[in-house]
Image (cartoon, rainbow, N blue to C red):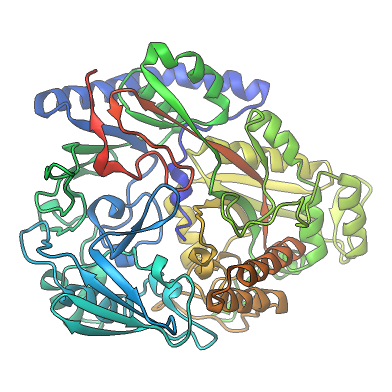
Length: 601
């Protein structure tokens, strides 16, 4: 599960009446910059090719090394490919693998590789590359990769074993039945001929050179890919350009090589308002429609020569979480002990949930195009539990919030401010990533809502890179609003719910190579969720498997490590010149990118 990928949600804005006026003013101010940027793209494309697809991302990628990436945007959906892939409905399909067979005991899967596969540099892609990718990279304890978390199996967290059968077959064997195993093998296969030397050679600190390989300063020509595209150029803070991989394996029924689109251009735009300007002025081919501008863009469909596609409830989640980490580093607690005592009180978290007016968020921020989110599991997933099916909810109830605070030992002072049992004023910092206007609006409303129940919140949007550093590295923060991508398979979120997982953000264990902690504590409910995810992955009966995930959802809603906010409806505006769109709420508008074509303007 990539915890940054939600930042690809475009054009989100402040939505109160006052905020809307400021938003419109900002858009007007941004037009000069936006149109200028668009003209630069259009001019460039006219000189080179019209057969390209252009859209915006909010921030630069963090690495060009797939094993070291745990956020979005990343380039690997274009330049990388695994043994399998998923279609628009989340169904597993062959990719580099031609076929596979599953043993009767379900613990072994044998893959047959497609013939004559090649890397983008023309070198053969072989079974040896597959074995190298897993045994020497993803399973290598010296490589701090989140990918390893989703491949660990059972209570003992063992990894699969891999055996080369012959020149085109390889067998993966799990220590016990592992229901989501096949779906996990869409991770990028890596080129042994390029990367093996960086695994074997060490730097002056004794660490593999691989850790510094394929960073953002790497020349695009030095990157080797097996996906549809290869990186052609990267200008930090401006754009990434991808060109077709001449050795990509896909061909259509007439034998013509796919993809059909020559170039993909990512325009780096640090404000979703500016993205809107660029889309409306014709500089972008795709725009993820935020609720605040749905009506405006719907009216302009014909004039703008685009169509808004609707996919129903989105797979992503947006939530507020508190730092529950009670650990110390160098004898100093990560979180102020006074605040930590609040955050780790279940009644405190429940009271906060009752104090947030999510229906107001839906009405004002999402313009009615959303619903309360109560579960960490994606709404389109068959494992999702709804309120109607018994999942607890936290409808806005400030009186209930106050009574929970009182039951937890808090009280109100003469100024009607909430204080704890030692007289400390309840005040904390709330972070989110700047530039994402929906999140900024959510944070503003949370601040307002909690003020009504006597809590001062210091809401501070910061650059996404700074947020990642605080959460992943320093581990020093109070609370933040962020989002996760999702999908049909709950085990994709195992590294979030595993107590030692690389994305267990609310109580994170330091990454390998970082200063470690003392006195980090794991709550009973926290461990129970971890155990249930392991059991669910072991269970092959779909009914029983769903029951296990139902129990996890009930535990998360009772204990609220994350306070889920709103599930937005999924909309994308796509230029009519892009032909072949088969919109999917699970995998987006471009899941079948290899089949898309650019038609007449």
